[in-house]
Length: 139
Image (tube, rainbow, N blue to C red; front, side, top):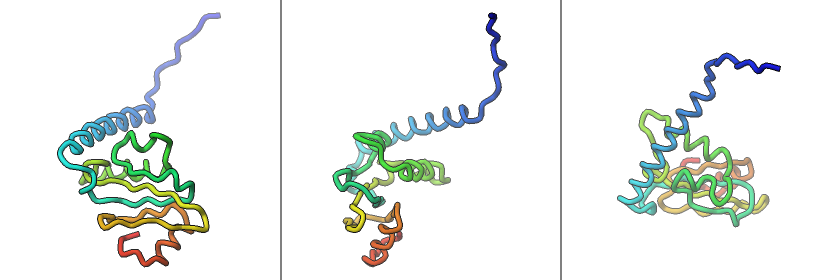
């Protein structure tokens, strides 16, 4: 049986994936350069809160930290991508840092620091707890 080669068709998803890879590479380089210039403690923070195991709490200051040592919620990756696509590009680690916190359902406690500029609630119980706590940061 003779194998025939399929005609090549343009694949839009491949082009998007390649563009996304290039953008992520640029972000990783910019993040590394920015971290050499200034420490991540001085950067504004986005507090991202989800229901889960509090042992998973961590500070995300680079693309690699999104997946290591384990994958964080997909909402975080989507937010990072959207912030990079804005007309004024915001780069993780260079322009902001994410405080990723998980809390048990029924015990929605979280810590808001003085340099927190935004709270991203990833569930209704967390949103209700943030509103009830009268957090003075945009939610």
